[in-house]
Structure formats: structure tokens, C-alpha cells
Length: 355
Image (cartoon, rainbow, N blue to C red):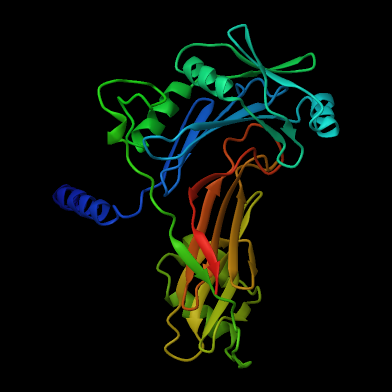
């Protein structure tokens, strides 16, 4: 058996190389975390870098988000968000809205106030000077503080340099003047261009379709779906219980069938399959982690931990023939910034049009 695996390794490597070459039309997502920083680059090559306080400093949660699109002339947008650990300051932010000042202090230098705080998004944009100074500070060993009233939140720089290098690599900026870790060995003209987000068309299920009945026993449906999955005992063990099936018509000939798949400590997931309403039914799995379905849209929202301060989210839309993934994102590290996570860090984005 070991010999066979060794013989297969070069073939698998070659296959992976071919697959990568064939998928070059769509930029692969990049996700990397190091200590207190994380970067996620989506399929358009836009990179979002999020930094936080040190994990041991949970009484003063704070996060900064740096956003940089692909392309030689792309700039960097910076945002800051103060968490709710210090309840008095957090409530004051929401009450005062635009009538307060958040300052950024780097290595003892006061860089002035941010742009006005937004009560709707719960964050404030950094000025261009603040962004540039912050990026340079994160490349080294620095003390970075966010100040509101008489309270100081300390942003960690641990892991920032490694994360910035990963973002530079994903956008083809290593060694260029536009990189986070700046260089002069390559011109900005060599930076990778942005990729267009795929365009998807959402089709309303059963629109202009007469109501048609579908009749199949639960035991038959279970056998049909189990027979289509080699690993159902691992990926969808609950399919073997007596939980009822949910069936929704998608078109004149296709149905969406759903069933509970698994339940964890603080998450649960249902399986979602598209089948033909007449033989051959040909089940096609969409996901085993669905948490919601409505009018041709499937969502999967899973917590990173029980208190829900970090999430992973996926969405699929009905295109008239199949479900296509339209969104995939994380809200960042679990650092007590706020319920539901600090930021939206997409891995995959699309442009959805309505049919």
C-alpha cells in the first residue's frame, strides 16, 4: 500500500498543477492568520487584513481593517472598531454618534482624530495619514493605541508583518513600491490586475410554473439520498433518523429536498439536494451545512464558537437549473469585538442579477 501511495504522489502533484492552470481565469481565495492578524483575499484579488488586541487583553477589544484592491494603483482604506468589552465607552460611542473623537496614537505620536464614527456600521474610517503611518508601524515593532475619551485600546502588531507579506504575495506586489512591505526590485506595472466577479442570475423558483404534486415516501427519499452519498454516515448522520423531509418546488421538473444532517455543540446543519421530480431523480448535493432556505436562496451560517463573536457564512442562489454559490465569507478572528463578528472578509463574491 505504501508503495502505491508513493507512486501516486507525482501523478497527484501533476493533476493539481493542471487543475491550477485551468482555474487561472478565477483568482483563488487566500486566507492566512498569524498571531493577532488575519488576511482574506477574495476571488477578485481584493485583500482585507484585520488586526486585533492581544488575545489576553479581552477587556479592551479593538480591531483595525485594511482593505486593498488589486492593481498597480490601488490604495488602502483603513477602518477601526472598538469592541464592547469596555461597556461604558462602547455605549458612549453609540449615543454620541458623530459628536465624538477617536484618536490614533503610534509610538507616542498622536496622529489626530479619525473620520466621524458611523453608528450604523459601528466603525470609523482612518485618515490617509493614519493609514500610511499605521502600515509603516506594523512592519516593525510598534505600540499602537486607539484612544477615546480617557480610555486606550492597544492594537497588537504581532503577526502583522507576516500577514502583510501574504497579501503582497497574493496580489503580486512583493518587491514593488506599492507593497505593504515596500521594495524596489520590481515595478508597480508587474502587479497582478483585479479579476471580475462572476455574474449570476437569480431566478425566482416556480415563477410561471403550475403547481405540481410530488409524492414519495420518506423511506424512499431517504434511500435515494443515501444512495447518492458515499460518506453520508460522516457528513450527514441525521439523515438516518425519523426527522421529516422538507420539499420545495424549484421548477416544473426540479425540487429542493432538505433534511437535518448534524447537530454540534453550538451549530447545526441541514442537507440540501436538487432532484428531478420524476425518475431518474439524480440527486445533486448543494451543502450539508444549510441553516436557512427562502425563495431560491440557501444560507449556511456557522459560529466559530458558542458566544457568536465570529461567523462563517455561505450563500447559494437558484439560477433556473442549479444552485450556484454566490457568497462565502468569514467575520474574522474570535476576539469579542461584537456579536456576529467584527468585519465581513469575503472569500468569494459575485454580482447577482434578478431574472
